[in-house]
Image (tube, rainbow, N blue to C red; front, side, top):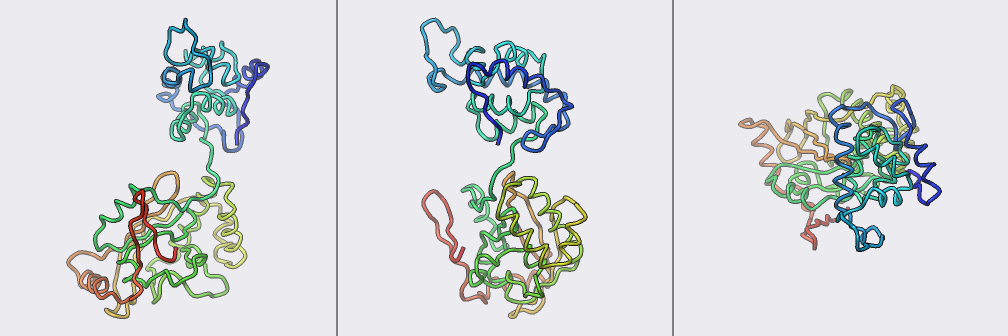
Length: 336
């Protein structure tokens, strides 16, 4: 977390911090990144825009009778952020475009920015936005609505650490209902790198990847990327520790330091009702939370598509995944 610089005596201190240049390096949050001219040009105007929309009342300042602006004055912002008025002027006029991480954090708090606006401010300042803490299993209402419109497609949602957090009826019919598997074991990374020869837990019957080595490398590199987004996640750290200790293959790949993402795969599902079904596996990543939306489909107008539809319609899993609409458009899934 960035340290807030608050108080009268912090004016000179904040000004000193403001003299950081683009050659300053450090670890996230606040690591210096490549600067884009188009973004730098917008730093000053954005600060003025955000300053103008914060009322003195919401900032805890007296309104006064002689104020000629509806928002914060430069003096107000300087006081709230613990920096000098001259430094605010230089930032807004574009004479200084690389404030330090501490000053940027103080400005974001003083301007009452949302998370997205805060991240934008960091980028305009040439800084990496602060990383989040723990991985979230939350699925926003809008994403739920989109998932519910996928029809008969087999779909599931995984968290940033490949923990299964949602699936639909078609997924349960095609692969078997995951709700009978303990929650802690519903993890695709653990299935990809089984410890001591453990059997996969996310499917009830054999599922074979046509490019297993590539899948292993991409899942590992995706977890490496997640550590950059969630450096303080105990859950992610524990998973990587378990995989490193239990899987020589994961340990070997992890040592390579590759960073990437898992995007697609081609699989053969040995379904008990229809026989083998060839499916395409497409992985979409949902924003900064790192959620993965996985959709399984069969090529159109093929025997595999016919068997796919039969497998879904057969309801082979009598314990098909139950879900129900909850207040606030949240979907609660049985067993999750």
